[in-house]
Amino acid sequence: MALRQSSGQTRLAPALLADLFALRDAVKTAAHGNATLLVHGFADRIGKNPATVYAWLKRHAGFDAGRKKRSDAGATALPLPTLHFIATAKKEAIRGNGKKTLPTAVGMNIAHQNGLTVNLSEDRINALMRAHRLDAAAQAAARSHSTLRSLHPNHLHQIDPSLCLIYYTPRGQAIMRDEEFYKNKPASLDKVKLKVWRYVRYDHASGSVDVRYFEAAGENQASLFAFLMYTWGRQEDRLSHGVPRMLLWDKGSANMSHGIRRLLDALGVDHQTHATGHSWAKGGVEQGNNLVETHFESRLRFEPVDSVEQLNASAARWVRDWNANRIEHVDCRITRASGEPMVRDDLWQLILRYPGALVALPEHKVCQWFLVGQELTRQVRNRAISFAHPELKKSASYDLTPWAEFIGNGQQVRVTPLLLQGAALRIEIERLGAEPLLVQVTPEQAFDDYGRPLSAPVVGEEYAHAPKTASERAADTLAATAWGAGVTADEAEKKRAENARPFGYLNDGKGLVAHSYLGQNDLPPRLLPEAAEVETAAVAAMRRDAPAVQIMLTVPEAVRAIKERLSEAAPADLYRQISAAFPNGHVPLAWADQWGALPPATGTHDGEPGLRRVK
Image 1: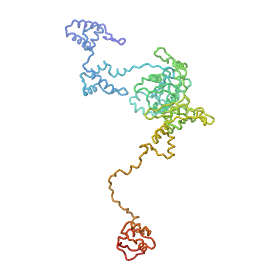
Image 2: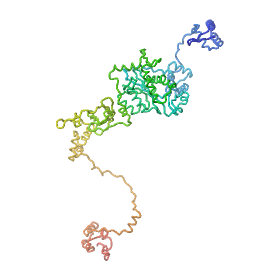
Image 3: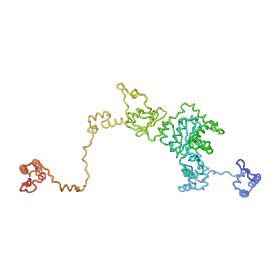
Image 4: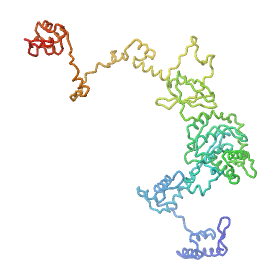
């Protein structure tokens, strides 16, 4: 046998080694150009590539071709801008799941079409990208990560939900098989209506792990809330508990829900999400998921459980033993940079050295209060708001006087209750042209026997001038604008009561011109159509059937009307003539309008004299 494998390296048989040494000597003494023929002929005889024979000659026979290194070694005919463009285009075309979508040849084509010089083959350009560490593999490994440390247990928790391979049917436990669920993953997973989700918590300082399972269609706020209440609450046989100072998680829909974020804010937890694609930032919990899957869930195939409740009970027992390193033949300890294996529970118990590091979770109903979906607002009244804090279980008054310059009566402010801080509130006050003002306020706690704050001044004994609110300062501005500089809102009220003229100080004391300028502008010409009379059946019937209505004048009224119309042409005895014609004193308006316009009649008709011509 010519070749032997040992420890991952190729060993040549003694006979082949002897032939290789003979070839070396022949190549050294061969005339120029014949050495290559000798090597190629040897390669053909043994069925190997000439490059392999050259490598054997160098490695096993000490052959040195004696070639000098080229002065331009490492240089390339391909311009660097072209190489950088193709490498960048390939990198930008990588999808979020890591799939590379732009072949080098396509990048070469795009580079050429955009005026870059492309004068090498695809294989050579790929080799150059690898040599310059511009290829996808080199770039994926380019990021180096700093090792971070936590100050104490509960300094930083990492939480990660993931879909479990276990699910339950009416027939009991089932486990997703790769060949069934990952060959056609979406269609297969849709068949499982209620999936089992695994929630893992990892304490960064101690490495302690906790796990809880929930049966649901997907990640949701209810499951996450239940997990936080469980993993941060005190549980029998589990040492680690308490609210952390910081929480690191990904940008899952449940994690970013408004209610959960409100709860974390209220608990004072600094919650952060790692950047997309940077799951390494919470590598501890990723490792925790792997531990749960390999050291606990692997057992379920051999001893199934019938429900999620039984699954959680078994998981709790595994967590107890894993963190305490009490599983026979399994080393559950964690090894850090120091190289010393350490028990996770022993590390977590070091929290005793740090006063204040262990913060108990408030009762469940208090935490649940923060899951309400709507945004909480309150209206400012007399520089204060009223709010029923979930820890107080009653309404309390919160004084905003120190920030009076930013608020006004009736203004709405956003409110976030804070837990474990004396029923404090975080209040967000909007400001015009500036970022909202965030303040933290505790409730009024000292009251007299009549329920009033002891901080309030006593009537007749103390005088306290309350600082003006933003609304009051705005009212002073309006008062000065209406009545003159220096006039306050209170003084403006007095002027209004005196019916004084606003803006009277303008125009050298003449005041505003508000209406006297009206009616002076020329109006544009307007064309109006001739109005048509109303023609309806009701109007026509009225015209046909209604008796004529006459408007009557007294004799003096008739005389005035005729004189105004005829002026000097009116007869001197006009009054006598009309009185004689109408002895009853009632003169029809229509008769007076036509008097003197028609020839005189010879008599009266129905008591009405005819018209007479004026001479």
